[in-house]
Amino acid sequence: MKTEWYKSMAFYQIWIRSFYDGNGDGIGDLYGVYEKLPYIKSLGIDGIWFSPLYPSPNADYGYDISDYKNIHPDYGDLEQFKKVLDKAHSLGLKVIMDLVINHTSDEHPWFIESKKSKDNPYSDYYIWRDAKKGKLPNNWYSLFEGKAWEYCPERDQYYLHIFAKKQPDLNMDNPKVREEIKSIMRFWLDMGIDGFREDVITFISKVDNLPDGLPFIPVANGMPYYKDGPHIHEYLREFRRVCNEYDCFQLGEGPMTTIKSALSYMTGKNKSLDLMFHFDHMLADCIYTEYIQRPFNLRLLKRAFSKWQKALNGKAWNTLYLENHDHPRIISRYGNEHYHRASGTMLAICYLFQQGTPFVYQGQEIGMTNIKLKSIDQYMDVSSHNNYHSFHLKDSIEKRMERIHASSRDSSRTPMQWDSSKNAGFTTGKPWFYVNPNYKRINVAAEENQPYSILNLYRKCLYYRKNSEVALWGDYTEYYKASSLLYVYKRTYKNNQLLIVCSFSSHHLRWHNIKEFKGIKGKLVICNYPNPIHGVLKPYEARVYEY
Image 1: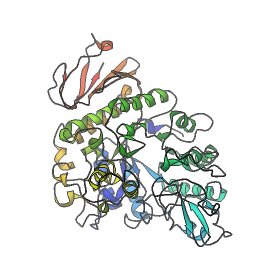
Image 2 (image 1 turned 90 degrees about the horizontal axis):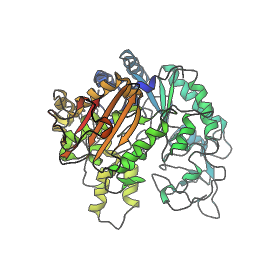
Image 3 (image 1 turned 120 degrees about the vertical axis):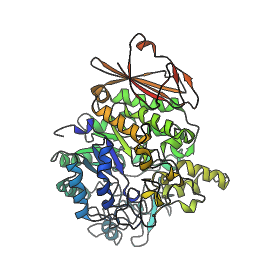
């Protein structure tokens, strides 16, 4: 990159279908985004990450793409996208697109041609295998929908799908496929976008013979053979060369990524990514997936935060996030809905003052919470249906629905709550999905004029960190590591220090400055309560001291 502008930025993720409907058909669109760009800018945001906008049958709501060089008609067209892009740039906002290249939709023209025969120009665009002794080619499971292989009668073969059946995996070993990817990248970069968030990018290279996996984790038993595969760095270097033709940055998603693995992508001779989304801190209340739950454990959360802060410092750059389209709402998980404002603001402070580039997901800035629908049939997310019908089948329907309430990705995809009018101000039509009933008290309009609202706390934090060298660049030190109620850390840069104190307790806690700060008079610059009490933290109170 010519510059590293992403390091001092904050991004806002738009999952467009639920953001804002500008034409009244019940579906969020680019017309709505155009109208709401000043609101996004008002948050102290510097860039937008769009989840997929491309044409798609929506088996996985945009992550099954049928045309990489167009806009889904539900959302507008290329002309409207260009209007949004130009307006965003005029407001000083960068724009990055989701690049989903591990798989396509089974309705993509490439796949439609590929499945016709074994000897057409697209036959090797996907990963096809014959049956093995009358059985599936191997024992892999998909992450979304049963076994990882689907039979295609036209070819009398099976195709690989690491995710849903309608998401066949591309064969990245085929040079023609990689050239197609580079053409897609140039198409959007020539239009003027500023970078890519690259979906499950660590999965795109598979081991040649696709051996059976060890069934110790049934859903992921093939993962050792498609995660960080043998040619991954070679292929990503090809894509990096395209980005180097532009002032463009690349953010990768790496499920189950370790620090060692992440650093191999972001440093050294194989550097191909500027940022990496990892999942460690999203496992403080679950095992592997949010559907397999355990009680929230603050020590696990702190351990994950601190591990990545320390390991990447001076070597690479962190991504900071608590929500996105793949996870349930964070107040419902790590906070407390009964202390909605307090826990929502505390959670904001706890992550926004770490070192890295923060990402805020639509609705997170007002404290949207999980929706609780009555039946699994009301949910639309393919992974929620798979979890409900695959795990804990001996549990009662009520217990399984409790798991769905706590885990479904659909909770992050309910329509954005703009005001207390009908449909939360999201649309004048019939919303494509259920609006959370709590929208009358949790919405943008209600929080605009409340000084201590979650919305205004996000604004305050984002403004502060943008104008603070220590908040942007400072080293990180954690204190009270053994505490199950307090998360306390320090940021240090040159002669400046910040102390961040966060209570995860629903009760008052007595607290005194840690010994390293005794005798130093700090200035309280941010607190999520008015009139803080010396030596006492109120439920879910958070403070930022400047030294």
